[in-house]
Image (cartoon, rainbow, N blue to C red; front, top):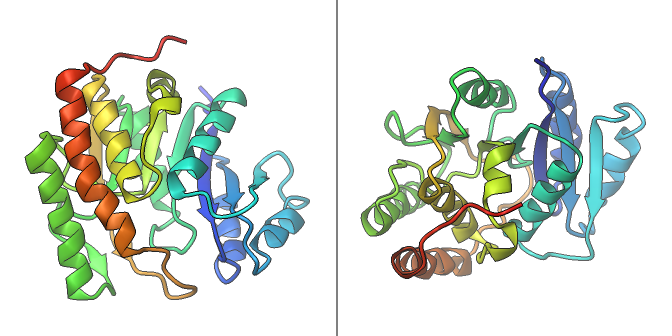
Length: 247
């Protein structure tokens, strides 16, 4: 059976990476489609994507937004677009090559062949597989997941991972209009919600390599949102049971 597969990549000032990333994804086996959601990059990222659409008709898509509106809202926009346009498997991936595009195939197979609903590209399921990060950032990321596990019970080693494959049923089952967080906590909230709704999650080991081009979009405010957000998620789950979205 042919499955339509859509990779969603949010961008802001990724002109140094986006052309190569598009070619990498387009050349994968399985005819992946790619949706770039650009938040008004002043460096011309969207122009590169627009120019390349002629080379990959019906497979390379672009949504341009007015300005920086947050990672979570970019993905929600992409999820809604994917569901509207009939995609079966929807992926989250960064533009900076910290996620290896060839691992998209492994995430897809974990869902399509092994019948999982959400596959997570995990840095920590087989140890600590992170390259070129300062030790302080590695520890912060690793213990963020430990903190999430402790507070919420979410059985995922890499709770903050942003490299994922969803079967469409997960995104249909989650009321996307009620997703609260737009930064770092968004990744945790989506996993936690999918788990509480009874979907099957699996972690697929990957090697995460820090970007070599462009600049990171991380900030201290993003981490603060996650710390508070995890407590909010746990309290919400106690007082308001999670229910599948009624389509």
